[in-house]
Length: 185
Length: 65
Image 1 (tube, rainbow over the protein chains, first blue to last red):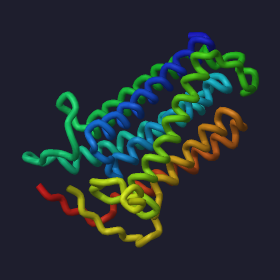
Image 2 (image 1 turned 30 degrees about the horizontal axis):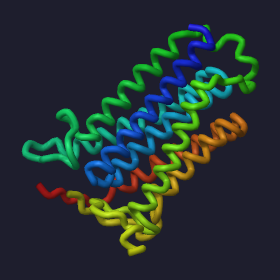
Image 3 (image 1 turned 90 degrees about the horizontal axis):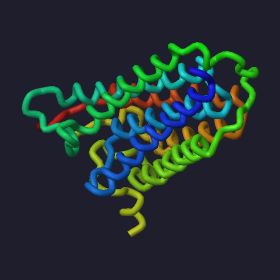
Image 4 (image 1 turned 45 degrees about the vertical axis):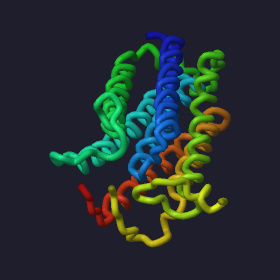
């Protein structure tokens, strides 16, 4: 795998993260279900997962960039597993709605596990790290640039959504309404 | 569903909004700023997110079924 293909695959990874963040937003808005603190932490880890690919697109592939994403994915998987275990007892309906038979935190765990496997797979290909130019910025194509700005925009939207949900205080453990909007009424 | 007791009082106010904002800034630095600064900020935000998780993980938690 050469450097150019690796950058394209990293851009595809950014579209994957953008899809996850957008799907979470769509579920939140269409079902009216607000994310709990643990759910927000999992979204945060998905957003952190994107920083490695952004660095790879900007400066070319480096093992340290992949390591950043691996750390974020490992933390995210741990957070999702924590929430799965909170609802592991028989008869527990789980938190929120299920999508295709799995709750969002189960899907999040699957997503982080898939990310870990894919990143490990990317690290198998040494040629992408040759002639890295000393970590100088590289010229990214439109496909990659759009992916980067899409992820940045969706993360910025999460700032506003979380502010609306939690207001200027601590987030509710079981949120049922937008705290900031309630105050403004 | 979840009932927790905030053991740190108001220390954790707006923690999630702040984390999303911090990640947005790190992304922007990774894209437009320097690589070293982006990596350092990434490490700081990752640690902050883990600290936030640990804070919530040690809350008193009562589940209702």
